[in-house]
Length: 108
Image 1: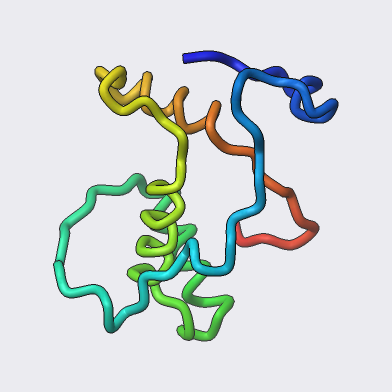
Image 2 (image 1 turned 90 degrees about the horizontal axis):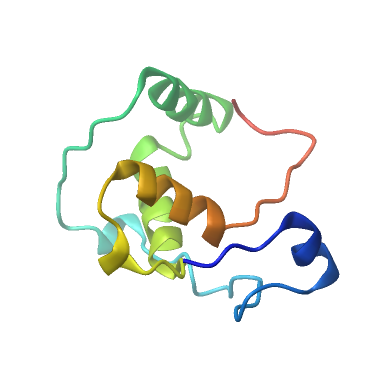
């Protein structure tokens, strides 16, 4: 898996990939589209963050909606899945595949 330096991303240089904005239809799974229940184990800080999102949105966005959106996002990542052998490799591959925008206000 190739690496891209932070400076390279800023300069527009990098490996053979490019960073693009996600299209409007990318994060698209709605509650009425979700028909499979799953049980997922999360850490205490992750659960607190999900609860905070629910609280700051007045309950308009629940943990299930956040997880659905994050799964849609994960499906867009350019990760070479057959090369992933364990959790540490997965976390590194996701970090390499994502750039984030930091805002002034965000839960957590």
